[in-house]
Image (tube, rainbow, N blue to C red):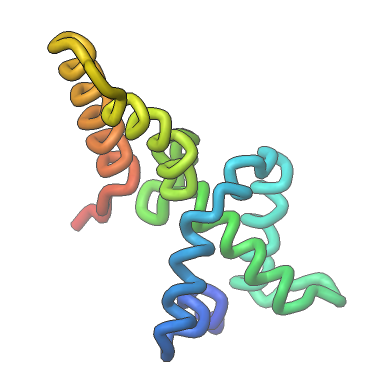
Amino acid sequence: MFCSFFFLPVFQTSFYGRFRHFLDIIDPRTLFVTESRLKEAVQLLEDYKHGTLPPGVTNKELWGAQKIKQAIIHPDTNETIFMPFRMSGYIPFGTPIVVGLLLPNQTLASTVFWQWLNQSHNACVNYANRNATKF
Protein backbone atom coordinates (compact mmCIF):
# COMPACT_ATOMS: atom_id res chain seq x y z
CA MET A 1 0.00 0.00 0.00
CA PHE A 2 1.39 3.38 -0.95
CA CYS A 3 1.41 6.45 1.27
CA SER A 4 -1.44 8.73 0.21
CA PHE A 5 0.28 11.84 1.59
CA PHE A 6 0.45 13.54 -1.82
CA PHE A 7 -3.11 12.62 -2.66
CA LEU A 8 -4.54 14.62 0.24
CA PRO A 9 -5.01 18.41 0.18
CA VAL A 10 -2.03 20.17 1.70
CA PHE A 11 -2.36 22.30 4.85
CA GLN A 12 -6.02 21.49 5.56
CA THR A 13 -5.66 22.19 9.29
CA SER A 14 -5.99 25.98 9.03
CA PHE A 15 -8.10 28.55 7.24
CA TYR A 16 -5.03 29.87 5.44
CA GLY A 17 -4.17 26.36 4.25
CA ARG A 18 -7.68 25.78 2.90
CA PHE A 19 -7.55 29.21 1.26
CA ARG A 20 -4.24 28.35 -0.44
CA HIS A 21 -5.70 25.03 -1.61
CA PHE A 22 -8.64 26.86 -3.19
CA LEU A 23 -6.26 29.28 -4.92
CA ASP A 24 -4.38 26.28 -6.32
CA ILE A 25 -7.62 24.84 -7.69
CA ILE A 26 -8.56 28.04 -9.54
CA ASP A 27 -5.02 28.98 -10.63
CA PRO A 28 -5.39 30.00 -14.31
CA ARG A 29 -1.73 29.13 -15.02
CA THR A 30 -2.82 25.49 -15.16
CA LEU A 31 -4.66 26.35 -18.39
CA PHE A 32 -1.27 26.68 -20.12
CA VAL A 33 0.06 23.24 -19.15
CA THR A 34 1.06 21.28 -22.24
CA GLU A 35 -0.01 17.71 -22.91
CA SER A 36 3.57 16.52 -22.44
CA ARG A 37 3.87 18.31 -19.08
CA LEU A 38 0.56 16.76 -17.99
CA LYS A 39 1.85 13.29 -18.92
CA GLU A 40 5.07 13.94 -16.98
CA ALA A 41 3.07 15.01 -13.92
CA VAL A 42 0.81 11.95 -14.08
CA GLN A 43 3.81 9.66 -14.55
CA LEU A 44 5.62 11.23 -11.59
CA LEU A 45 2.58 10.60 -9.38
CA GLU A 46 2.30 7.02 -10.66
CA ASP A 47 5.99 6.48 -9.87
CA TYR A 48 5.37 7.81 -6.37
CA LYS A 49 2.32 5.57 -5.98
CA HIS A 50 4.37 2.48 -6.92
CA GLY A 51 7.42 3.51 -4.88
CA THR A 52 9.66 3.93 -7.93
CA LEU A 53 10.45 7.64 -7.78
CA PRO A 54 13.64 8.68 -9.54
CA PRO A 55 16.32 10.01 -7.19
CA GLY A 56 16.28 13.74 -6.53
CA VAL A 57 12.53 14.32 -6.83
CA THR A 58 11.47 16.93 -4.27
CA ASN A 59 8.23 17.38 -2.36
CA LYS A 60 7.72 20.64 -4.27
CA GLU A 61 7.85 18.77 -7.59
CA LEU A 62 5.38 16.18 -6.31
CA TRP A 63 2.95 18.85 -5.09
CA GLY A 64 3.30 20.67 -8.42
CA ALA A 65 2.49 17.47 -10.29
CA GLN A 66 -0.50 16.88 -8.02
CA LYS A 67 -1.74 20.44 -8.64
CA ILE A 68 -1.52 19.95 -12.41
CA LYS A 69 -3.30 16.60 -12.30
CA GLN A 70 -6.09 17.86 -10.04
CA ALA A 71 -6.66 20.90 -12.26
CA ILE A 72 -6.86 19.02 -15.56
CA ILE A 73 -7.85 15.37 -14.98
CA HIS A 74 -11.29 14.42 -13.65
CA PRO A 75 -10.73 12.31 -10.50
CA ASP A 76 -13.47 9.75 -11.26
CA THR A 77 -13.31 9.36 -15.04
CA ASN A 78 -9.58 10.10 -15.51
CA GLU A 79 -10.53 12.13 -18.58
CA THR A 80 -9.12 15.54 -19.43
CA ILE A 81 -11.60 18.30 -18.57
CA PHE A 82 -12.23 20.67 -21.49
CA MET A 83 -10.39 23.93 -20.77
CA PRO A 84 -13.35 26.37 -20.45
CA PHE A 85 -15.06 24.01 -18.00
CA ARG A 86 -12.16 23.49 -15.59
CA MET A 87 -12.35 25.27 -12.26
CA SER A 88 -9.17 27.11 -13.26
CA GLY A 89 -10.96 28.33 -16.38
CA TYR A 90 -14.05 29.60 -14.63
CA ILE A 91 -12.77 33.16 -14.12
CA PRO A 92 -11.06 33.71 -17.50
CA PHE A 93 -13.91 32.16 -19.49
CA GLY A 94 -16.73 33.39 -17.24
CA THR A 95 -15.67 37.04 -16.98
CA PRO A 96 -16.64 37.97 -20.56
CA ILE A 97 -20.06 36.46 -19.90
CA VAL A 98 -20.48 38.54 -16.74
CA VAL A 99 -19.45 41.66 -18.65
CA GLY A 100 -22.08 40.81 -21.26
CA LEU A 101 -24.68 40.41 -18.53
CA LEU A 102 -23.81 43.84 -17.12
CA LEU A 103 -23.92 45.77 -20.40
CA PRO A 104 -26.30 48.74 -20.11
CA ASN A 105 -29.38 49.31 -22.29
CA GLN A 106 -29.68 45.75 -23.52
CA THR A 107 -32.45 44.57 -25.78
CA LEU A 108 -34.60 41.60 -24.86
CA ALA A 109 -32.70 39.45 -27.37
CA SER A 110 -29.28 40.37 -25.93
CA THR A 111 -30.51 39.77 -22.37
CA VAL A 112 -31.83 36.33 -23.36
CA PHE A 113 -28.57 35.53 -25.18
CA TRP A 114 -26.30 36.47 -22.26
CA GLN A 115 -28.52 34.65 -19.74
CA TRP A 116 -28.56 31.55 -21.96
CA LEU A 117 -24.77 31.70 -22.38
CA ASN A 118 -24.27 32.14 -18.62
CA GLN A 119 -26.55 29.24 -17.70
CA SER A 120 -25.04 27.02 -20.40
CA HIS A 121 -21.52 27.75 -19.18
CA ASN A 122 -22.52 27.06 -15.56
CA ALA A 123 -24.21 23.79 -16.55
CA CYS A 124 -21.15 22.66 -18.51
CA VAL A 125 -18.78 23.52 -15.63
CA ASN A 126 -21.00 21.59 -13.22
CA TYR A 127 -21.25 18.60 -15.56
CA ALA A 128 -17.52 18.52 -16.33
CA ASN A 129 -16.69 18.59 -12.59
CA ARG A 130 -19.49 16.25 -11.48
CA ASN A 131 -19.20 13.30 -9.16
CA ALA A 132 -18.89 10.42 -11.61
CA THR A 133 -18.25 7.63 -9.12
CA LYS A 134 -19.88 4.37 -10.20
CA PHE A 135 -21.18 2.01 -7.56
